[in-house]
Every structure is written in C-alpha cells, then in structure tokens.
Image 1 (cartoon, one colour):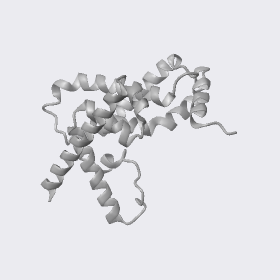
Image 2 (spheres, rainbow, N blue to C red):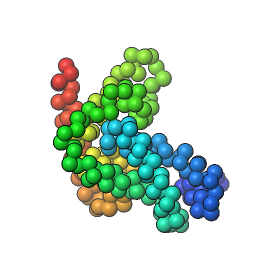
Image 3 (tube, rainbow, N blue to C red):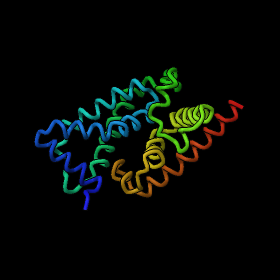
Length: 201
C-alpha cells in the first residue's frame, strides 16, 4: 500500500532531522506555494510575502526538531508557525497600518495574480482569464479590509480548505469560535465585495 501524503511528508521530516539536505529542499518545494499564498492573502504585498516566506522556512528549519512526527500533522504545524509569524508581523507594523494604502502591492498585475490558485477553466480564452484575474483582485482587496481575526479564519477555511478542527488547532481557539469567525468573516467579505461591485459599475 503506497504511503499517504502525511506519511510521505513525515518521512521527509525524519530524513531532514538526520541532516538530509535533499529532503529539506523537497519539503520547501512541497510547501512553498502554500506558505507564500497564506502570507500574500494576509498582507497583500508580494515583496512582504517573499520576505515572510523566507522567514517562515528559516524558522521551520531551526524548529524542526521540536515537531513530533508521531503525533502531529506537519501541515497544521507549519500553518500554525506561519500564522504566528504573520501575527508578529502585523503587530510590528500596526503603527503604520493607518497610513499605508490597502492597495499596496497591486501595481504589478502579474504579482497580484501570482498566489491565486488556478481556477477551473482558466486554460481558456484571454477574456475569461482577464475576468478571473479581476475577480481575484477584487477578492484580495476586500480580504485586506476584513478584520485580521476574521480574515485568517476565512483564508484557512475557504482558500486553504482546512477543516474546523485543524483551524482550531492552528489558531488555538475553540471550534465554536472558529465557526463564528468564519461566518462573520464571510458576511463582512460579502458586504465589502458588494460595495466594491457598486463602485465599479
């Protein structure tokens, strides 16, 4: 019977703990897009996301020995570590949040579209791709205006497809709170998207 995804990753983690550099490069390759996507969805800045992604993997490398291969999910552990770093980043930059434009990082359309997951049918005509890119841009801009606690819950659930238990473990809050934040975050996001739609019509 072939190994499942978790067993495969745990095998790489074990090899990495034993000093296998190739295993470490595989871990980074497997999870880089996900970590970058989380950073980008939370910050909206491609430059900040690149820096934060490097910080995450540096922290992972230094902390890898603390991960219990037998008991935990590496993906949940990595997401929690990424989330903690993002919270620290938010706190460090909170004093400048009021003066920074929420549109920062949107000057380069390719960079803005980079972390967006490929949508079904995106291998279609240029007009459809342009519309999908515009929709992704509107969603990202609206996400940046959702309060951070609600935003991270929505990102983990709707954009990274984590279940309630995993999100609760990652955020260290009860599942009921997770569900409440997701519900409130979706409502806030829908309200912002509706407002944006009216502004561009």
